[in-house]
Image 1: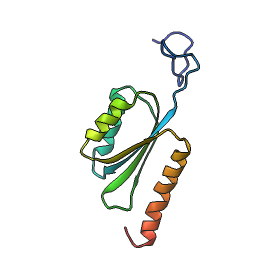
Image 2 (image 1 turned 90 degrees about the horizontal axis):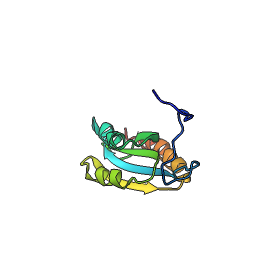
Image 3 (image 1 turned 90 degrees about the vertical axis):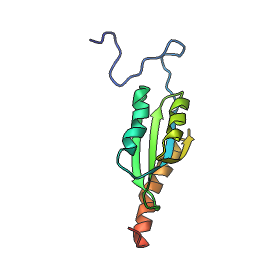
Length: 123
């Protein structure tokens, strides 16, 4: 049983950080093969390290068989996860940004690009 004043949803500060510490959101954008089990492999890399994904979005791209995975993580020290992601065969490209406006841009792209492809007659 948990004790103390720590509330659910709050992160306890580590020994070397102030109590008000809030990590910068990191936005990972990956192009992945659209196959069963790929999302599970990617998310498991975060789970094994005890990292929380605050936002996850997967959408098809205009290229057949390729999906764009956008993942927002409030954590520092993602170097190990990034190294492991680049080793996955299904990950084609991986980018990371710290800019919160990039989240909106990525989600807009994911919504608009498939619509444009459908309008062009691409299923």
